[in-house]
Image (cartoon, rainbow, N blue to C red; front, top):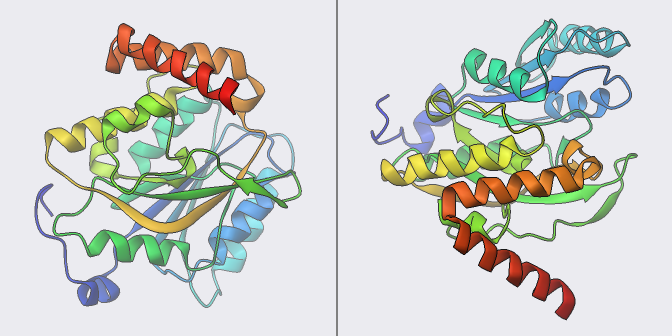
Length: 273
């Protein structure tokens, strides 16, 4: 299918399948990976590839993945499961590997500990994609925050807008990375910039959306909660360093003066609240 071609009808897609790649990057994630695996395993949508990119774990991560593959072999709804385990050069290096390996039309990164909100989440995403006159560059949705035991904490403070574009992230990362399905053909031309240690996902999403604008491809709101996101992610643990990187990323994409103005508004808004 060409980049700007009309996608198949919903009926054709039900028959032929709009394949979605879910990528999970792990390293010694045995304490968290099981609930993520179960979340993908429970998806009612059949056309799913689950890539598990492991950084040569030394705990029981790979044992849990192996059991997952065994269960999948006789599951009612089978998914493709691919796991590689080898040393890497960090999170974003592993995520770039996943982009290069992905065979789905869309790719989503779901971290160990994060889960899909419901069993029909990917079904809803696929339906949203095929309803568009052009196959969207991005399908996105909302996010809940959960604690280490998977208990609901709150809805994410930043809410995805009805109409998203690359300038939307001037107001912060309005769509969580775990709720951002990018077309794989675009993602392959937009690898994560590994000079950013904590916020390369912020930069990546902006670049994907800029490319979508350049090609006049839509960004589609699925109008559903996509992910239950573990509150204590890497960005949260390295909050100050992440904020510095985000300031640099915003300055690069939106200009220094504009970024200074928006940050002044962020400070004022926090004081008012």
